[in-house]
Image (cartoon, rainbow, N blue to C red; front, top):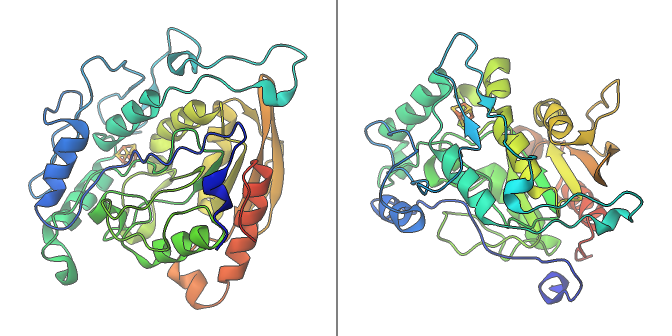
Length: 344
Ligand code: SF4
């Protein structure tokens, strides 16, 4: 395959650094977590028994997000920032009249690192906390030698990504086991194979967080970061998790130019997050569909191309509702719109 994306020379910084945790099989998970995030747990809620050790947030990390004690609504709130939302990553707003691509911002990947650590310690949704930890304790027989991650799964991919892929939520024995989005389940097999096919991933497989997979200019995230029972978060849980996605979008704004949303749930969850992060979402809200495309303008920066794609779930891929070629087509279109150069 022509690996054009790894030989780019333009201003696109396709960092291949990955920021998501960890977990390989068995006891290596906790050790890797400690190596990645440090061994102390300040700022991160304790895990339940049988759950991988917590990543730690550096004590100097600003309190970008805060959560009320779980209540009837369970809604976390964004702490009111002392500065504009992107100030903590050194972002700069576009000068009036400047060309859209003048909006670059000065990327500081530490902002996304901090966010990922804080997400990993979130316990705002009692039902999901109980479920993810129950799954981690009981495990599936095929993964009996694993130490499950059993925590919220942060996004995966470089902090200067130009293309964002938004799914639904981690799978109980996939992301909830491995600690990385779409890793260790059939949905991930389909997604990463397609990303590899179009030159946006370094390898076609995603088995565990230490498998060497790197994404080129792409970040993968979800509107709900905890595995839900039956893969169905409630509307309250979806809304509770939105501040994390809003903050992730704000941190990515200097570089992200397109997003692919997998499935109607993600589409409905993502639209208000894009609006809160600074893009203008049309009214009435655009409907989801495979191949749907809408441009989201922004008053203080470049537009973002939003693309709909059927979810890579087994139900869709086994029945042929979503074929590999359909998925590759959407990824190629969105990647090109984002300024990447996908393989043909
Ligand atoms: S779903 Fe989101 S808000 Fe709820 S506990 Fe998990 S990370 Fe926190």
